[in-house]
Image (cartoon, rainbow, N blue to C red; front, side):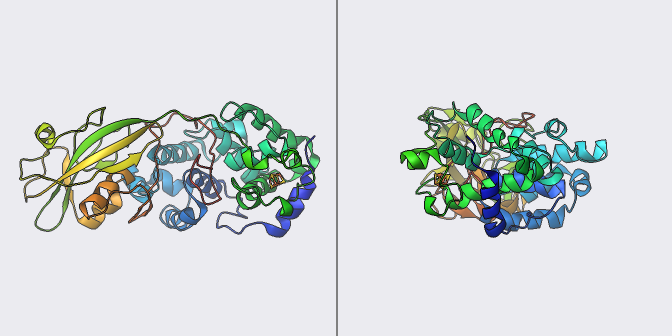
Length: 386
Ligand code: SF4
């Protein structure tokens, strides 16, 4: 039996969190916030969200911008396939004359999957939809005491969450109900030690009644990620500029700038001697101690860095950029190498010049929809780390 939505909405009306995208019915702003929140925390998203809107205040401005400008604004947020999809979807929206107003129409846009379509439909268009992210999965698993582990239980949890639409109040206030679930999961029904005493649904929660709330949702053990190895070459000239290269348009970090280097191969780290034929120019390359590590969804990338100074013409495919501009342009994985060059350990949890360093997905450009529901958001976490 589903607990009454009235109790959750009553709590939400008193305790809702204030966020810059809350209260708006503008689908562009809601969509943008949802895409950003799928990969990083509320605290990290808020300033970047405002800055993005300053630069691209509406969907027309985003559609008209060149990809390079969007990519530069996205630097440091990780997960570049989402930025590419955001850009492509903005162009599709402008081409069709506006946002579709229902879930099915939204899902037809590049990169908008079940979760985002439901969130935008419910919040911007007041359509009867229940977006299911990690917070909602957790609340649902606990309220209904679903003990099957994720990800196998995901479909069942989505059906249970959508079951709330049987209540007239949820159909009247679908956007508020969705955001109430998000807030409950982020503030009270947290991954560890949920604050059940304060929860508006504590009298209806099956996991709490059974005393198992701390262990839900259960998760299947993760397979170990493959390791890949690369060696990159950071060349600076007399003015301190950095030599960068543009990656191919598809594949990992497709179309992004990089510090030139070897391919990322399996099993064996590169030696400098082995990698030298792939250096962008002949120079007195010096291998730095340490390794920069970056996690993608399906693999762990371990990179060494060689450095040199030379003032030469950029070879084909490469270009010089002033250091600050290079730092702002490079994706997170490459900024880990800069941390190494600056004496850091390339540590995974460092904050770079543009914000937190986040794991990025291994999938290349834009499968047309999300492959999984966004799991961790709004509550100080990154995706699927709840
Ligand atoms: S009672 Fe506790 S476990 Fe159940 S929904 Fe509320 S906060 Fe979560």
